[in-house]
Image (cartoon, rainbow over all chains, first blue to last red; front, side):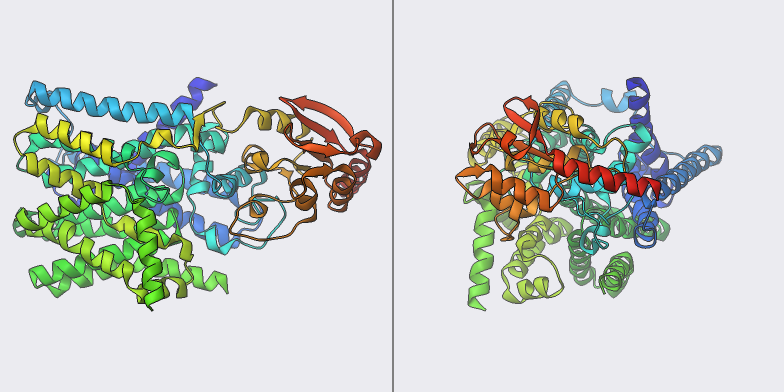
Length: 361
Length: 266
């Protein structure tokens, strides 16, 4: 049973997002189609997909909504992941490629930098060990984690008061932020209780995912001085561990409330906005094909939709951040079209707010 | 308006914990302001943070934030759009340039000295199981769990266990949950009043309150004083888990069983 559960978790949390990530990277430049980018894009795409499939089910299906959502989402995820893999394999013969890490890359790194990378891995390993062996008390779990437990055990979505268990009208304020239900989904398809998934499994995905975003940011910041990247990552990992200056910082959320939507917003969604902007406006961007740029804008659109999975505030913050950065770049490059493109990527955020307003009436 | 500005300033202070890490960030930001040549990095990591901070402190933003229906208590999350970690670490990596080893040691030292180690937080403890909830809760829930998902089971537990019961079993109901404990809400609940708001738990009052809401099970904390013998009120002790005494109320249980039978036949 345990072997099945572990294989299932690997399938759903690594294989499926990777397969899904192969779709959006089709539109990215070849050098950007690395394993890390595919994985990040995959999760953004997967969360966005969960919102697209989940929100109608939450709103319209009063009873047995969760079981319907599990079947629908599993089927769509597998189909799209297969589509991503198939496209990559078929187009490979025509020269389409993804960038896989090779021996040459590792050999080109100095021994000192290898030791730095090892140190970084050890720090992150320590954080993962602590997240597994230490329980972090947070009162919000009695609301958010319980929403997932309710879904798994009563087959309803946001229509039972998590505090008491009494029937309730649709909890509009939280009903569109589906991360507890996504965690329940991961538990159900792997035969695991959602509380166990949230506290003991999810950190093994969301912590590395957060560092992957910082790695991608670091790659862009140190594009010409790659040897500084491992030191950057070590210090970033330390900053997370010592950033607990108050209960409010995103660093505190990352290591104490990893599984909650708020942490996903602060440590995955919002940093990913900076990563995508660094890609969009990198130095050699002038030479880039329009198609390549389109890929990043679409990714930003997926991010704005994916942000809804974490919280309604995240939707506003990611859209405002996108709009704000686009405004600054539009001024810098004297291109009004940048603002228009950024505005188009925020359409999912506007749709989210409209749905929220409609169902809250 | 000035009052709102001051409130936002207080939120900012609380966010930083008034620890030196914010100073390290400020110095790093200033270093980038003076030395960073790459315009896109200046835009994202020098100019944007200033604009965000101004926006955060601006009273109109706070008013707008609340006006669109967002919870004022989450206003601090606007600060998450300033990537303080990235700015600090990037600036330090640039500052030390080729002297990576020295830079690593010095910056790591400064981060550790100026920050606060997350695992020393009083909210973190050794996990008792993979659910990361107390073993007592698992044992209690396993003892009282409903025979089938439609059966009605309700339990009242001491405050320290309230957060966990439904994280383990959502088919177990409670007369009240976290909403009665969190300080930001000021609700009244008769069961909570009898269970938590008196120096000693008066069993007679508690049983009266639990019977009104058809709560079949009562868990008493090992640390609370009790006035009256639960047996005198018909309660049956069905377990003692690490000092937590678990009682069943046969009077309520009989009523609830009747309902369950009725609904099953329906």
